[in-house]
Image (cartoon, rainbow, N blue to C red; front, top):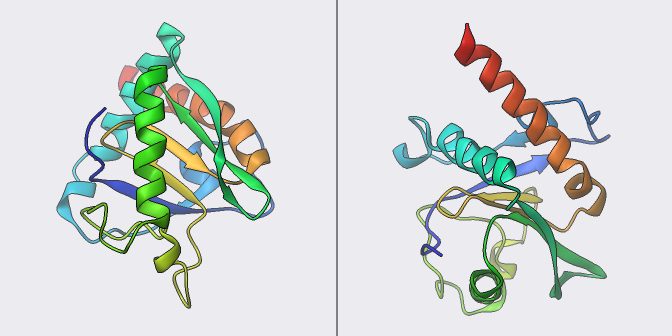
Length: 161
């Protein structure tokens, strides 16, 4: 597992997009304001996630111990069991720890301390460093593999032409 650094925040569209929709049309990605998020970071991570799915290592998991009200955190990842445990602990520090415990390139709006006032919009996060996507939104996360498949198909069609 790599140190958390680039976490793209987004807002899930409502009503939820059809399962045949690409991820980029199912969520609204926030402008992050740093060059690291530009110049191909999202498509590069998406290609690595595609490789995980082809190998059968992409999983949907629950982090039962991390909740938003009664909703457990759901993760789409390709981490080993040991890495996942470490990853969830790092997310817990990001969410619950003193502000600044986990330093990121830009604010994530995942930390409880950040989720006040105008910073309550993000409800989907994409860790571009570890190729992990996470949210507390159960129905969206259940549809995520379909959104990803549509995105892979679109990227592969564009690459072929």
